[in-house]
Length: 337
Image (cartoon, rainbow, N blue to C red; front, side, top):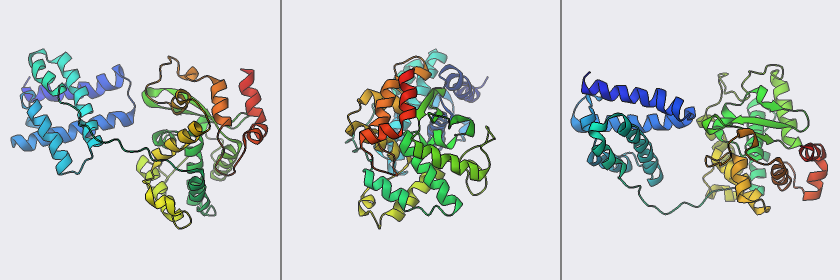
């Protein structure tokens, strides 16, 4: 087998076997690895003045890797964070190659030794309660897209779900019976259940009823104008458009970079400000560093109850006693487990 074919063989095995089967990574995470390796190999091909299909294992070294990182910062305008993400993806690939290609393992070790670039840490962006309300209240719910966007934003804030988890949400993942909740599929195909506020469950139920999909478990919940499931970029566009519109009524929004992840940070911060333990928040959001072994018991339900009770739905401003009273069915169910 030729050298270039050997490289392509390793690339295929890396994606089809190592990342999918052995590591069990999500589709979106695998796409990140794919994009990084694609950019890297195209850079190597350009640098060596050959086609990508002609790139060999001998062309891959630490010097070329550093040159690639410098190039994506300079020409593509990548941030240091993005540069480090690309490097982390490449290191995973070369760690895999070390186990497969012992002959060149020394070269791969040199690439593994390329350091991440230090940078000043960007402050976490999150919204105040009045800013969340300004965005949702600026939406015209009389048209179908407005109602859809209103439901998406409320669901993002209530659950703190990743945008990919919302994109992939199906009707069968929603439980409307008391207590209402959603089951999402997170990183590594881990499942977690997140309670819904009654207000969120109500607007979601009405939305699905209007779409006539309540009896279709496999139906995707959020679709674009072409009837296809909304993508991550689609939801990002929706959020940015709605935030921009709300800026007139809430000028502080103009100073913030707002995207889907902002809502994860927002509910996390509101929980933290309500006295919820940081570990509970990480488990609630399904962060990758969970130490539990079973996805259904990754967080104690009593702690979930406290976390839910400490926050307020976007639609109203509740004190703790009123919130518990109005969600009495949910509280009783949690306490009975």
